[in-house]
Length: 384
Ligand SMILES: [Zn+2]
Image (tube, rainbow, N blue to C red; front, side, top):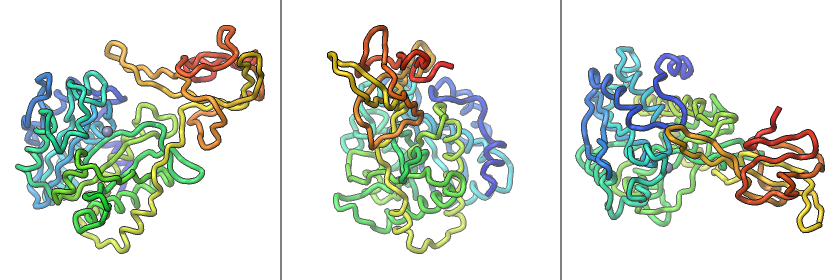
């Protein structure tokens, strides 16, 4: 499948970066309403519309949702790339819309998207609300789940830059999970179907970005939407968009995300039998917490008159200032850090730390400092 070519053709150029709100996608949904059905499935806490995009008349029904966590927008971007494909009149779009009926909620938590928070406007993590259903957003998704009766669900998220896979680790650019349906984490026929789709996605992605694909932890929690829907007998696939080197806007990851969707659909169309899928699934390396955005090594610090050579790390915080998102780096850990890597690493060669006369890094301080006379760090990065 010519993924790159398809992506270049269908990429929705009106949206990019990390901060994606309902205002960004409403005009796009309006355009798509000429080829697809856009329906209202509910309202957010603050009264914003919860919208679903529906297209196709195939027998296999796929329900997808993104931005249940408001600050997790990579999958949403890839969904709009997909909408451009599905709304086109091409052989591929006809194959997809004749095999599948799609119901896709691109932004389940528009209040959180606007505020750039994980939680909804009541401060609730919607992905812990699927047993009790206390929030309008979780109720709306459950209602559409019950009405639409999907054959597959796709639960779309972003993960932090801290996750890596393999040894030596690469950033976990995409991670997958076929959620458990019980505490024992058994595999039944339903979970097996989700595993099969993930294996097909992983095969395609390994060809595009070898060693950047991870498998997420499968501890069972009935409050989580994926576990809940899997428990209710619908194969559910969790996709976590993550970091790709130097891609803090997640525009590269967006491409891989788009490719994984197409790979999964093609697998379902072709109806291939996967041999030993469970083994292949379990062979996808598990996500591990292994990265910081920045690691500085071999820096001389002086704390209370005691000098030593140490390492320390900084991490970006995503901070919404007005209506623009800023990445601000803060120092988060000081120590040996032998089990950690930085997406960016810098060797201080034993030269002294200085931050306006302070001779050691403090947790929580902004990552603005110097090492020796000639290395100046501003917002985590070496100033050239
Ligand atoms: Zn999430």
